[in-house]
Image (cartoon, rainbow, N blue to C red):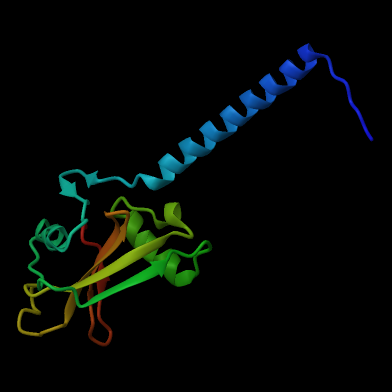
Length: 159
């Protein structure tokens, strides 16, 4: 049998130090999680909150685009922890608009793609231009307009 005796004053000090350490650690973790979990809901006058399909359609109308009511594609993607050349180029496009995907490394996000029906020069080409958004916790964290044609284009919505 093994017995340790500790004076109650020492024991109180040890528990107090442990409690302070635990409190500080939990507080720091909470602060970091709040920072990471709270994407910006507005950039200037642009509303980035898109929790419903109606809000996603309205999001594109802020830029003068009309989209079909139903998305052409919805998928879940994981933002990579380390960006390859393609993600670095895409993130540069996003940074030009005020977004930064590196904040969401490792996060699962939704990719919504809508057909734009009134893109200048493409009005009569069904399915030729899409508006794409990446959504994290109901907020747009990246967006672009792209052509689905061979040698098409991609540009930011906010540019």
